[in-house]
Amino acid sequence: MVGRRAVSQELLLLGERIRSQRIKLCPSQEALAEKAGISANTVSRIEGGQMSMGIGTFIKLAQATGADANELLGIVPEAGKKQYRDMVHRISHLKAAEQEIVLRTVDVLVEGLRQGR
Image (cartoon, rainbow, N blue to C red; front, side):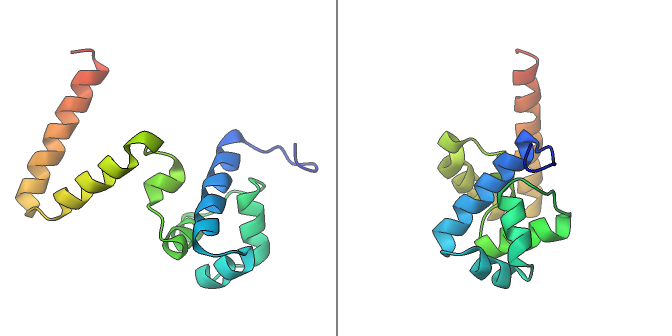
């Protein structure tokens, strides 16, 4: 509990990842708030895991910190971040039809791994 509010582990982790990105970018919550067009109090509460946010606020924070949304959400494992970014970069330079082939292939591979093939 924080004050009288229950805090979820997911909100705490999201807040920590946003704080980490902010610290890399700028020293204060106020500076990030100004850049994102939200209040410093909102940044403080989000970083502390004390409030959830709408998708609009999440997008503003991701853009203001220059962070990948997946990274902020904790989807990319720490060990694979560079490899993930490199792969996304390489795929983004393919033609649309080639991107589709890569994505379908990855889907088949992931499904096979989940099923233990």
